[in-house]
Image 1 (tube, helix red, strand yellow):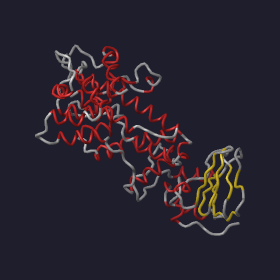
Image 2 (tube, one colour):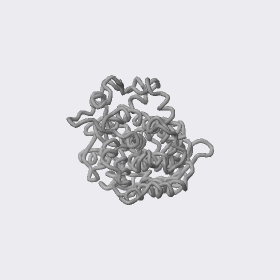
Image 3 (cartoon, rainbow, N blue to C red):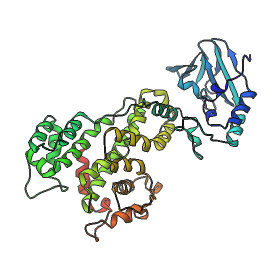
Image 4 (cartoon, rainbow, N blue to C red):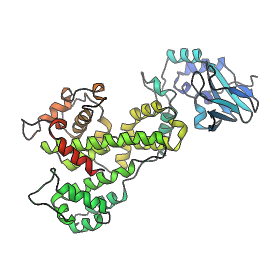
Amino acid sequence: MSIRNLSHEEISSLFPIRNFSDNSKSQLQTSIKTELIPAGTVLFSAGSDNDCHTFLLEGKLKLKLGRDNERVIEGGQIEARFPIDHNSPHKVTATALSSLIVFSAKNSLIDNLMNEQQVSSHDSGMDIIEAGEDNLLYNQLYFEVTQEMQADKLLLPSIPETAVKVRSAISDPHITSEKIANITQQDPAITAQLIKVANSPLFRGREKIEALPLAITRLGLQAVSNLITSFTMRMVFNAKTSEIKGLISILWLHSRDVAGICAVIAKKLKGFNPDKAMLVGLVHDIGAIPILTHADKHPNLTENIQAVKDTLEKLTPLIGKMVLDKWNFTDDFTDAAINANHWQRKTDQPANYTDLVIIAQLLSYRNTPLQSKYPEPSSVPAYERLSKLLRDQNDSLDVIENSQEELNNIKQLFN
């Protein structure tokens, strides 16, 4: 039973309609009406065909997937801004828990209006879908994260406490190695890692070091700060749900591998610090953490893992800058977070840590199933820029082939 027309405000809050032109919205608004659905009605069953976009405006609706998996959505909630189970055939059974007000539009109508003008400007600015990004039109995770970004409510990770204490102490111009050692020794694991690094090929001196103060003296205070931040960063990479745990594990292993490659290459270059390079590599994808944390708290958002991956690809660089700005990291870190995947990045400036992360990432895919998806490292502009800074021009950036033992030693530091 038709009961009322849709308001412009209502229709402009719904996905993918919010991205339509004003003319398309008006056309849709005049061609459909809302319906009143009595409590207890089954709107559709799992396995049934779906030729409509159906939206819940008012009331409570139960969605059941299989025997034990069910959830309730309510009109006005963020989830209700998306079509109810936009799958064909339907994956869930939808039952009205109360009287509902819904509206449906044929898929053909939505597709036609979408083709007329897929993207229109929106006053929020943040969540505009660009041409060729149709995969984001129904992406609830993308929408929720961008909304939280706009409202300054997105939960950003904090630097682990030990790293905060050390970074704060090192900012004191009168700080001594002994005082830093006193702070660091409160964490035996980090103490052991620093001594191990001080004796590693990256920093090795003539004599083996077994005491932390001597290790700190050899490494230098800034290097100690960078290394401790790196070693504690694993704490940030955590999740509860199995789906997100899997993605975070992949993210951590990639970040760890890139960090190691960055450190080993940096040792070969003029003007680069291995400890800083390691940390830049480790946090280049840190923007993925708030996205995965949000998805981890809302299990329904992880049902479509591809939607999670699409959101990560779109928002990780932008959120990465937000996180690193919060942590007061320098421009070298934020620039790498923003441009780490710009393989063909061109610049008139000398090579920097962004170039290092680009090459390290491409090298990390060497001899893996992902290798064919990415450019050959030597084919991108960053490779030539970095090669000019090699201390030995007969040396190579290809550390995967000639520095495997050193890379394995660095990996072990993060285990």
